[in-house]
Length: 215
Image (spheres, rainbow, N blue to C red):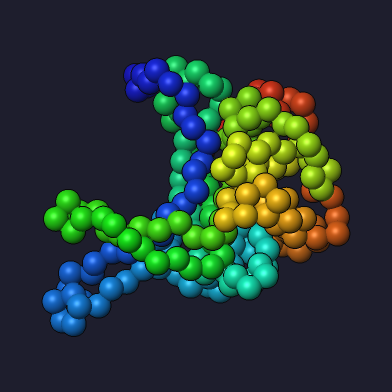
């Protein structure tokens, strides 16, 4: 039997970098190490090389840098899809979620005794899931078009709905900054450049009728 929940699953949120104490290293010399979500231990260069062979939904990024911000992390996780605003059962499917993080931040807060490390929010994060996993019925009704695809701004992130991927841009410069970032997106495989429109979704996808299979 599926797990019953009363509220809809929220859209993906901006990833936070976590500063973790590595106990063995700390005992040796008080060393600290940065970790992120998913496979955060791999370098961005290594992760990009691995993802060039990815055969799932189209992945988008900003290259090795976005202005003065260098690509600092490429992380991935597996999450349940969000289909409708009222979810009766926790979906059994899990789909990949990717974060392309640009720039660094200084972790603060947390409690070692409670097992919570300091955390911080990076200045720019391009987060994406398959189009089937997050649609306009859940993330927000589409308004203006950018690069040929409908988008939604919720005050925190700009979500772009494409044919294969739902992209959410989080940044420190609000809507203006997110729109500028959207114009710089390109596909990781080089198929779509910054001067080309993004592939638009169908009405069927926007209305949340497409379902995901575990990958």
